[in-house]
Every structure is written in structure tokens, then in C-alpha cells.
Length: 527
Image 1 (tube, rainbow, N blue to C red):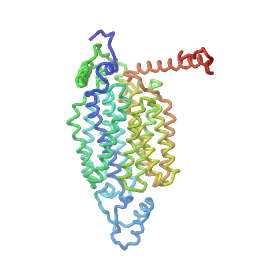
Image 2 (image 1 turned 180 degrees about the horizontal axis):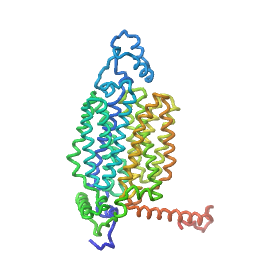
Image 3 (image 1 turned 90 degrees about the vertical axis):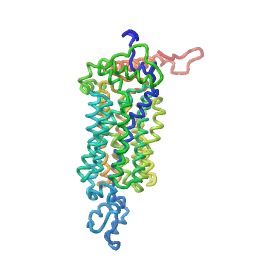
Image 4 (image 1 turned 135 degrees about the vertical axis):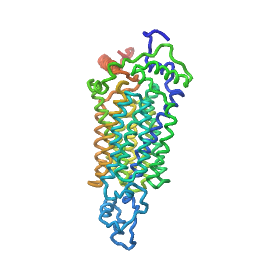
């Protein structure tokens, strides 16, 4: 296949010979991104199986002539109704349907703190799963860890539907979070390492269509299946098909190369080329020197000044976007209207982001969209407090649009910033940070009941505008090859530094021609 001196990178092999998104990669993308659908269903069980039936008015007075009970039932303000409901004797009221929510099933109607703990517990599990399983995937392989993460999700979801008590259900949600945290990070990185550079930026949005499909699917099921246990069990039916199809997903050739398993990587690339109807390149695939990074992972990343700064910014912005993304949805649940309609609107708000952002991500670049999405989210949350009541929901939807675009972009953008040797751990650590935001989101939403209904939106506005500001410190990755090692990052930084110097040099040389040039004088076009 040629001498070692003529060896090419795997990126170059995809671009020039194997193909960047042929049938082999498209099949892997469709199967590899499927876990996002089940993840969305399990995440938003918190809105559809853990809702407050008191706020929804899903109860009635035992005695239709009980003036005290009727007065509480007719209160328009949800917060006042909730507070006074808890002062009624339990013999004065009854549930319209006890099995519709964990709140009514486990008697949590006056224990909002416990309900919000369940919502936060899922993200506590996600935090553990994304960090630990993301790290393990860097050591043992993406596909095997993805299988294990999906198994954890399947088992915990089944047990959750059978939970005999609040504490058992709480534990099941923690383990469900562990599985979902591991599968979301691992499946994204696995697919991204199989496709070519030209489509990698768009893939970060493609996988989110699975997520939106999962959101719409779970709200549709919730409208048809009222008992929360059967609704939870229905999610299980969508997890199980993955186990029959997961072995069709190839291992990551990049991971195999970085682990020194070159022969296996070549076999994977040959299979992809065959499915694509293309061929392997004549030149050999360059081996990646993994010795420096194998046993150091995040330690090496944190020693590198640039990578350390980007890592900290990444973790901060992921936390903030997750607070806003879930917090806005949970807070709008406290607005007037059908919970199904509100949830569906907030879900559909994501679709325009996943359509528009991919169209411009390779034109405007990753960084402007990342910053701009935070600005849209922050300004929209602020607008919710300033517009008339009938415009509050549209402003919240616009905020969800901006934050959805950032959330989707964050995976691909972060993946492009960090080298293969620490990529899964970096994305996993950032995802861990985001789940701290997920843990905080229900608690911040709960503060609307404690302080003021406007408090959460003020908080979301401030933190999102702050995130937009610090995101200016991240690099632009559009059109650049995926780095395989920390040395590749150093080389890219050197190229960028030289380019900036040349630009400044050109600017200085061009100063005499800033005026309109005289006839016969040609302004310089480049240095």
C-alpha cells in the first residue's frame, strides 16, 4: 500500500477515498443515534409522570356542599390553591385518578421538595454515568460501553414502572440517569468518529432529531396512556430493539488507532468502504502515537494552558445551557394551559433550531452560533418578564429555540476542540457539568413557588448572557481537521497564530491604500 513515509491520516482517507458519509456511515449514524430517542423519553417522564395533580385540578371535593373545599378548588392562582389545599383535611377531597402521577400514587401532594428531588436525582445519575462511563469508553471502547449503558437504562426503567414506594422509584431514576448519561455521550462520540469532517458539524444537529422525536413520542403516549406505570413501561418497549441492532454499529476506527489496534481499525475502514461502494486508499493509514496520552487523559489536558481554558469554559457553558434548557421547560409547566400542549410547544421549539443551525454552521462557524444561541436564550427569558401575558409563552419558546441550538451544537463543537486521546473524557466531563445544571434546574423552577414567578426567568437571562460572554474565549473549529493528539492542537494553534500575524502584517501594509486608490494604482490583495 505504499511506504510509511507516504502514510495518510484517517481524516484524509475519509475525504479522498473511503467517503465522508456513504451508506456504511449513514447506517451507523441512524443506529448509533437511536439512543437519543429513548433518552428523551426517559428524561421527560419527569414532566409527564411526575406532574402535580393538585395544580392540574385533578381532584374533587368529597362533599359537593363543602364550602371550604370548593373555595380552594376555585382559586385561580396555582400557588394559592396549592398552599390552601394542603390545609384541607384529607377526608375533604379525593383524586379523580390516583394512578396518573407518582405524586398522587405515593402521597406527595404536599411534599414538593420530594418531587423535585426525583427530577434532580435523574441528573445526579446522569452526572455519574456521563463522567464514569465516558471515561471507561475511552479505555474499553465506545460500542461495548454503549451496550452496557443501554442495558442499565432498560433494567432501571422496568424496575421504575414496578416501584412499590417513593424511595424505590427514586433509586430507579438515579440508575436510569446513569445509563442515559453514559449512552448519550458514548453514542455521539462513536458516530462522530466514523463520519468525515465535512458532515461532523451537521451531525451534532442530526442526532437531535431523534431527541425531538422521543419528546413528541412520549407526549403522544402520555395522552393515550394515563397510568404513569404503564407510561413508564411503554418506554421500555422502545429501548429493547436497540440490543438487536447495536452490533451493526462498527467500532470507532479512531479509537482503535489511538489504542494501537491498527489492524482492527483497518478492518473497520474496509467494511465502511465496502458498504460505501468505495475503496481503501493506496497509501497506508497513519498510526497514531498514543503512548503520551493513554494513561494521563484529563491530567495532560489540564496541564495544557489553552486546553485547560477551553475545558473550563466548556464545562461552565454546558452547565448554564442545561439549566436554561430544562429550567425553561419546567418553569413553563407552571403557566396556564394544558400540560400536553405546553410540553409539545416546548418540544417543537427545538425543530427550527435543528433545521436552521445546520444550514449555517459551516458558513458562519461554530463560535458565532454558540455565542448567538446564548444571547437569544438570555434576551428571550428577559422578554418573558416584560411582554403582555399572551406573549409570555412565545418568548419562552424563542428562548428554548436558542438554547436548543446551543445544546445541540455543544456536543459537536466540544468534540472538535479536544483531541481523540481525551475527547470522550472531555465531552463526558462537560456533560457531567451540564447535569449539575440539570440537577439545579428543577430547584430553580421550584423557587417560582417560594419567591416570585419571575425569579427563574431573571436567573436564566443573567446566566445565559454571562455564558455568551465567556464563550468568546473558545476557538473556531470550522474547516479544521479533528485533532488526534495534544500535539495536533499545538500545531493548529501555531497555524492560527501565524495567520493572525500575517493578517496584522497585511493590515499594516494596506494602510496607505485605505483611501480610494488613484487611477492606475492597485490596492494590495494579500501580503
